[in-house]
Length: 144
Image 1 (spheres, helix red, strand yellow):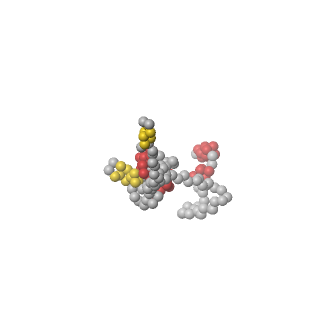
Image 2 (cartoon, one colour; image 1 turned 120 degrees about the vertical axis):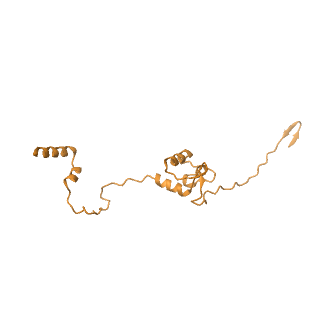
Image 3 (cartoon, one colour; image 1 turned 90 degrees about the vertical axis):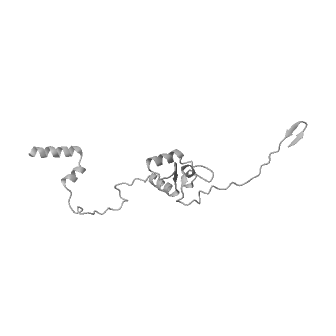
């Protein structure tokens, strides 16, 4: 502080220093962490000093309430692990639909005891339209 004709002047000195990394990248997959800390995990889009931009704490809590995300209860606090997060993400993954038929699919071998038997009338009904089925039933009733 210096004084110059009744005015006080202050000088601000700022030193640069490095903050230690929280270390979630090297955390073992079975170490329990709080749901808040889980938001800093790289697998959820977080980083050393930033929360996830993909997942919110409310989404994690909702997953816990639905039973999708496993947690450990430590007193009144819920803790999860990287392993539980990975399992939850796998459950959430949307798998692309595979077509039931097409030229690029391999032929499925028929297995089981019924594979060599010809189709019966009950399985034939599944392939017909509702009108065809109704006409077949009407003809059967006429025969009686």
